[in-house]
Amino acid sequence: MAGWVEDLRNLGGIAFLIVRQRDGTFQATIKKKADPDLFSRASKVVRESVVAVRGRIEPNPQVRNGWELVATALEVLSPAAAPLPLPIADKVGADMDTRFDNRVLDLRKPERRAIFRVRSVVAGAFRSHLDRQGFLEVQTPKLAGAGAEGGATLFETTYFGRRAFLSQSPQLYKQMLMSTGLDRVYEIAPAFRAEPSDTVRHVTEFTSFDGEVSWIERQEDVFPLLEGAVDAAIDRVRAECKSELALLNVDPKRPALPLKRIPYPEALEILRGRGKRLRDGDDIDTEGEKILGQEMGREGRELYFVTEYPTAIKPFYVMAKTDEPDYSFSFDLEYKGDEMASGGQREHRYDVLLARMKEKGLNPENFEFYLKAFRYGMPPHGGWGFGLDRFVQKLLDLPNIREAILFPRDRVRLVP
Image (cartoon, rainbow, N blue to C red):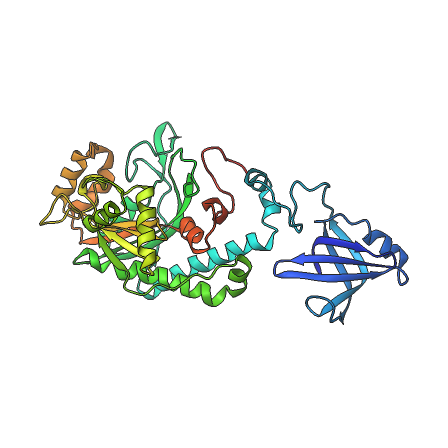
């Protein structure tokens, strides 16, 4: 059996190696009387070295898992340097920079790896739920000639002498696909935002779970697809990750469906009642989201939609309401007071879309590749963009979004 040496206990005539594998540890026992040379070599092994131990499995009720490996051979496959830059098994903490500078060691801790087992199950649940709904998984470009939302949050690069950008979102491409007959698509892939934010909920490279669906008659047609996927993910995590949830000391609750819909004007009234002064037309900021989350929490609602945001604060591709054009067919999905997703019904009418683009100060010539799809028959459609990392953070009550990302990227961190 092979693994990392988590601990070494030398009691003089007998030595115990606690060897860690992916799903737990086992005890290798070396008796000095049986093999003095083996005992001597085992006593010198440095913690976190990779070893292979051969021997007999024997029952031992005093050991945590009820058995031990009585060693007859020991090979150090890869010795670890000493001292270690951060503790692995010891209950001594390390600051976040030290942890992420030595992320491969940090991820040896079972509670860290538990996060990524949960994350994998979440992504798998999203896929299987939408697959059953007739969706097709797609992959869109991550190098683009224009941004989905424009603005200063684009990472610019040079592409064979031309300007290019890292993708903020697959938004434009998944909308283009709605004109092809691939009428239900989703993607789980990286996206990039050049936001200089130093917060516990922002990073510059994140994983986005996006969906788009054609032939909708109203925005409401999108809600069951997204809330169903989120509910399926929570249900599957509860069923398949019991040991990980116990290790992390969390118990995520499934929501009651359908989720509550809070129109934007109603959300403003709730916030004003709590002393948060927002004018009609203002976006709901982070503080407002937290207050709204507290109010919904009192009703036992961790997940809910805020709908019908002002058209002026939404991207050009969001459809305005017919009877109230100052408001839009849009929504945010909130979880425990943080935004998880934005979405809504898209503007599929070419002339209206072109006018909206000009209102936003965008040059239609830069979006010709996108607009072309709307000239030749575009069905009504809608969808969402959902932050997978942030969802895992809130699901597991992690203090920082970086905990939910293997190798996070932010304003100051580019390695490892």
